[in-house]
Image 1 (spheres, rainbow, N blue to C red):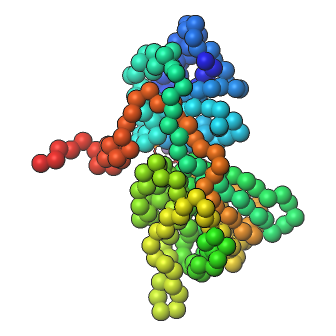
Image 2 (cartoon, rainbow, N blue to C red; image 1 turned 135 degrees about the vertical axis):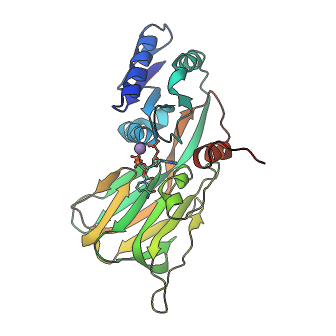
Length: 269
Ligand code: NAP
Ligand code: MN
């Protein structure tokens, strides 16, 4: 089985990556292949896994990811840095088991004549404005829904619902649900201006279109990436046709993962 390692630059991550490389080269069942891997082991935190996903974005349907956690939160990462031998053993006994989660499709049309962009996010995409109030029209399934005024909008996947979306008051969605969520960032609501004021969750046959009034000041993000120096005419968000696959050698219940990450060690009395 062809395995790649995608590591951040931390001391522990480098150590883990070296251990992995040694064990892979000593294994008759595993082979290192950074170009066309079947398994990508991300070593670091969630940010590293997001980068690994974007690095291998073009072949994401043929890859299963594994996350080794060496630092901060590690919501996406199932393995700890001291479990390298256990993980190698699981890879050697692999029988293709996986779990998959929805991704966000982002289609961007620009005001210039340049080609449209098609991006895919694992966590979320945001449209924000740092200079003055962002004003945009929001459409759901092609029908006008509202004129939004505020700091920005966050459109997230179920696995991204625990990231930026959570910070702006969105709901946490179990990734067994094929859905995307739109949450507001500091919307202006008064007698004159009105938005819905609560997050919305849309199903697979619906899509969200955002048309900015003043694209000059807008920033569009896709996970850690952002678009600059292009004027955006409209953005369409929907659930992507592709999904992300994780090799599933152990099963952490989603809500257990949420409670471990956000509530921490506690007893229930
Ligand atoms: P970062 O600044 O390290 O990320 C912020 C925190 O979000 C980190 O603790 C990160 O975990 C955690 N995180 C990332 N994805 C998560 C997920 N799906 N569920 C729960 N927590 C998650 O930057 P980064 O590591 O490059 O990650 C980029 C992401 O940061 C963006 O996609 C966005 O979701 C998030 N972000 C959040 C805010 C906010 O909450 N105000 C603002 C900007 C960006 P690790 O420590 O393991 O990396
Ligand atoms: Mn990070």
